[in-house]
Image (tube, rainbow, N blue to C red; front, top):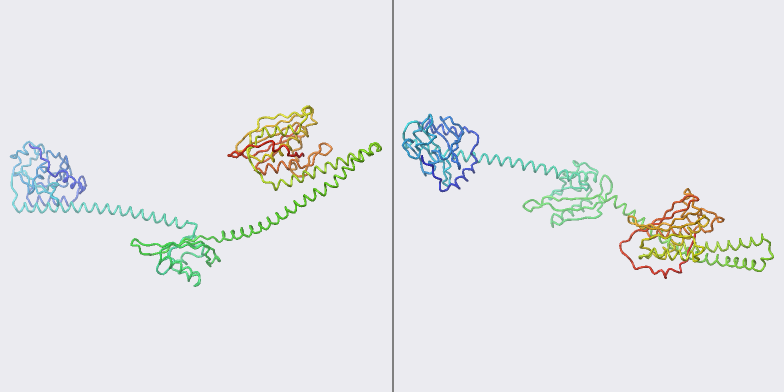
Length: 569
């Protein structure tokens, strides 16, 4: 037995064989019919359609053999030898041919003696397999039988081509079905997107300028159902005048193919006059021919009304601001005049009270001298009140100029000025204080007012004590002044930072009720906050917080602040 040779075009042959995608496919009655016809024409008990793969021979169809669709090793295949020939291949007696003596496939119960076959040849000349007939007796086919076998082999090739085309068609149909499904899904998605766009979307045909599609927002904007809109032109929906304007815009888009945009366009609809912001773009087919005009319109009626209202409010506010500015100027003039006019008689009263006490004091009894003391004290308090009011009013007009403030040095200098006599000082404990970005002069006034209050309200304590501390927390620097003095009732907290609202009487503690409002105004001008905690008889704690600023400014010269006058509560 000889092993069959490999054809010279084996790679190309296998490529063409596999391109038919016929191997291991189910049985086909057409191929089985050709095998039966071959056996009938040639008068043989057996016939087969075989294909030679890389390592095997596979039976696509067989007649009389009973092996069905099976395969055998290519080395033992008769057809593997047959495909090496260009024309009809025939072996009259296999038992006498050295190529097949000892072949195991021929030594079974049924011993094949005759083999004849016609090659299954492609247009390029590749032999894929054989249409073969076999007999148990040695024999030869007649020329007519050989021609019939050749014609039947061409029929097998036609069936292979048909089968290939059918599979390709099936695959194409499957791909087409898939693409159609994808297209349907994409269209549904696009439809859903357009339908849910909050702006009105509409499409017109480019020839007659009639609406062919609208979305839900367009229905809402026009106050019409889409079946009332589709197929209609602008003149049927908005009137001729408005239609002329809209269709002229459409023609500009159709002729020049630009994108058109209209701002604050008025449209009359069933919902009344609407203000629209509209954009139109041309839509062309694959050949570049304009077919439709796409429009997107945003209903800005409410926004336009709000803008007009805002403009009116701005005008009113501008007028109010002008009035307020004029009023502030009047108040400044009044404050200066009131300060001058009030200070003059107060100076006279205080002066004459002093003269009376000096010249006639010894002649007066205790009651008279007491009255003089009251007059002098009230005049002094009134003068202080006038100064405090003037200082408070000026805070509203002063710009805040921030720079880095050395809070430790600033507070130390305030303490030294408030208590120059070390022997009678109220003990003030000064802890570490972080620096801040602030107006140093204004911030000095805050410390003067808070520390003078703490000293004043704790002086009646058995062992007065004031503590100053600071910390950085989050985006703020927080400063605290704590004393162990008289304290106040938290039920009256809402009066604490109000002008003229004092929580203690003049008999208990002197003051004008301006100091803490000044503190509150300065801190809030810096974008900060101020608050307090207290309990009657157990002291008070005042906190103020300033925002942390990233950049540093030049340091504060404390000498420039030495002449700032304190104002107390």
